[in-house]
Length: 178
Image (cartoon, rainbow, N blue to C red):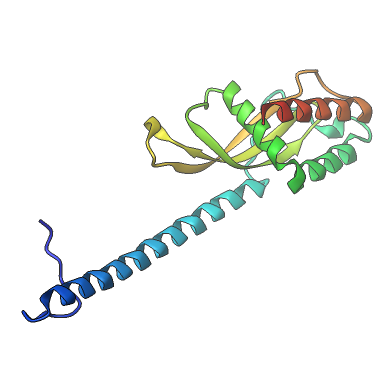
């Protein structure tokens, strides 16, 4: 048994109605507390998800190739980066992030909530994703940010035509997943 303190004292006459009124008031208070907790969790998760748009603390893999090594590729990479981070490609970027996680040691029971292309080079996407990690198949989840290098699998693209083709192939393969 759990002792409950009523908001209003009840007299013996009209006890049932008084108890029901008190239970209703306690229920309303509980719903307000739960709602406040849910809002706080949603705000915390939104703040964490906004971190995926930060380009700070990116640690590129050793095989990362900079676009600066190839004339004209810096602008091309920047243009494609902006395009892929538009809302219309969010589904494909989430699919690429999920596929990249499946190929890594990180893959477990996760859900990709939001993803972005943090950087792109002539041979690789560097994705940053907000993922919910469901440990041991429980309903509790931990929201975290993960970095995912995703290679084009076709080497280094030294010109804009082959670069765009490699990007389109990756996006098309992501569309097949989703």
